[in-house]
Length: 514
View 1 (spheres, rainbow, N blue to C red):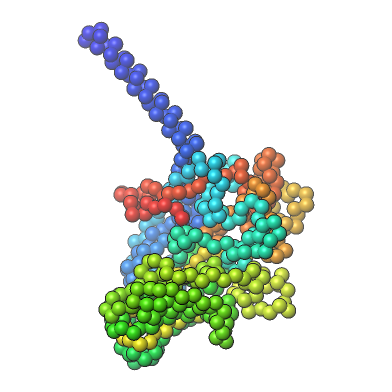
View 2: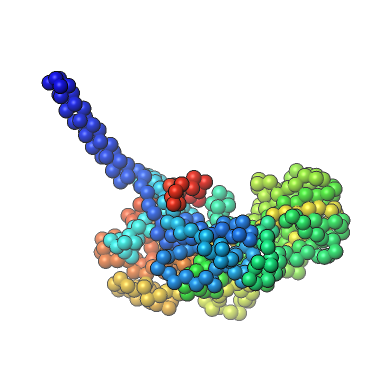
């Protein structure tokens, strides 16, 4: 070996080490100031983001779904159900045994955005947990529901906001976020392949067809052979229209599900001849909401229960041609009706109720009862019905999904695990109403304060329930309970990446976070 070659090797080694050090520094800077990865530990944002969970495949319907899971749990197999068949239909032992345990989602967080642009309502945000900034749960991820300077009132599961003493207004979610938040309750494609193998009799589809003589079902397609009026009516005794999530079926301390009026009902309809009229009616909030299509016209109308029109909009649509399937989606969310035809929104009707009126309508309570006495009460169940007339037709893939529903819970003793600032004693008292859910405890946000809530409202410890901040936050940043100060924001969660099952990453689950 020559002296020159030895010197070259030494130089190459030094350059390699320098390159590695520079790369490491750049990686640390990138991680610290640009993008950082986090693992979701719990199911408070489910099903948008999953904590540790079981991936379950139903051998009866072919449907995959996720269930929150902790290896320390004493799992009762009797709690497993086949959600699209009904909550009282047990999942087969074969499906339970094949369920695989998965780690929580890995998310990428964009840290450079918020120093220059303020967060928007309904962003999914990572921030320092104001109640435990130094502990194992120091980093939290929730959805932003309240902005600085606002007063927030959560009524009947929806978000209302007021600013500078103005009236409360419903805060509607953008379409791309709303589309990602629908949670499937029912799908007519989900039928058992072997009814005799079920340990409990299946009651059948929740849709009841009338007149019975005009309807047949074959290979998951519903055929109606008459040109006379026909109806599909939802049976609440089979599947309730509420905020229940399959993800929570193993959770302890189960609470009553809340009836919900914010739903999406969709179906693919194929007329046999020209002249079909199809309409869907939702009865909720002491009103009737009707989506109808006929010929080349779509109509959305809001009526009183006695049939008097209150608002109506019309729009042109492609003709319902014989033999051509058309996908209709009827959305009712955040006090808005929307109609989608083959994925495109063709019409929308907005209506306005303030939080007090919304609560009275949801609970069917008149003005003689103080609003303080009805806030937090459950609403009335909605009714659903399809009407058809004018042509024989086929209908497939009738789906029902529900929206987010933010619950009005009561504070637990954990709200005072940290010291209480003078004057906040009643605000954080155990047993009192959750923050922002009652007219006596509206969420009044300061100029640098945000309100956060989890998508899995039933099992989310969030800005409704936190209580006092820890001593560091109280002394150095903000001693207000329940809120997230601007200085605690880390960044916007924007993508789910690298989901590792035992062998191969599930690339189909890589997605942007909405």
